[in-house]
Length: 88
Image 1 (tube, one colour):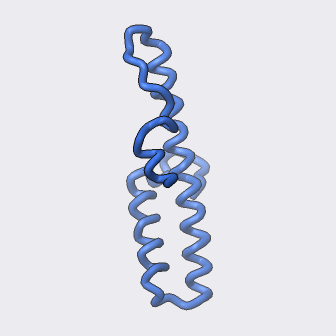
Image 2 (tube, rainbow, N blue to C red; image 1 turned 90 degrees about the vertical axis):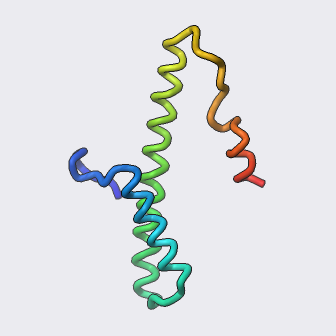
């Protein structure tokens, strides 16, 4: 879902909602093989877009935390309990 200008981008929430819809359509098994391939491609593009946006947000938060020496230490986002649950 790469876009050339910011106005054409759907925003993280809309992209995530569309990704969830695509996954649901694929899991439903009611689309043809050809349509499944199109939806899979769309889903991969949406997934990459969402991952990019999450990475950008994480970097911004880390910069903000570095700028504030009084901020509590949070560690990295990879060290959060929810990320460990997803792995296991």
